Length: 207
View 1 (cartoon, rainbow, N blue to C red):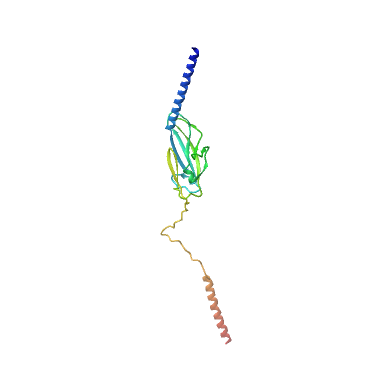
View 2: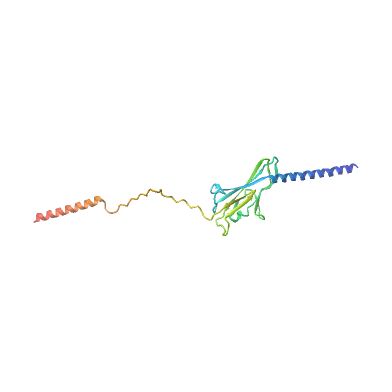
């Protein structure tokens, strides 16, 4: 009788433990579903918001993934994961910041982390725009993590601004000085005149 009682108690304890584990799993899943996700991008080369400027070959873009836990309970073992499939067409991954690369899904996945109650965690990765962009591309790099963002890419490079002259003010021009100077011409004429006078005076004396 005592043996049966012990077995019954052990079975009930195991059932309660299993029920508790199941309920905790559901609570964690519920909290994870309540997490607010967002993604942003920064053009490090141009030092501007990546959505506000057009990216060019060799530009480095830094993507930031944010997980916010608005609840009053911590989220245990949250897995941050995002696809870089569309980014790979026009850019090359340069820094995964500790993420594992899943070749089957072309995605980055980080080690599970706890998200404290009413707090956030962030993960970043960087890509570099390829030197040569494929023909026929839509020249858009889209990424999703809660929200969707799209970076515009261009083959060209920004041209340096050309200075515009101030309207109404004509540029000054100074003609270059060419030929003999004025003093040289005066001296030459004077010498010629003196020469003629002396020549005539000499002829007058001989006569």
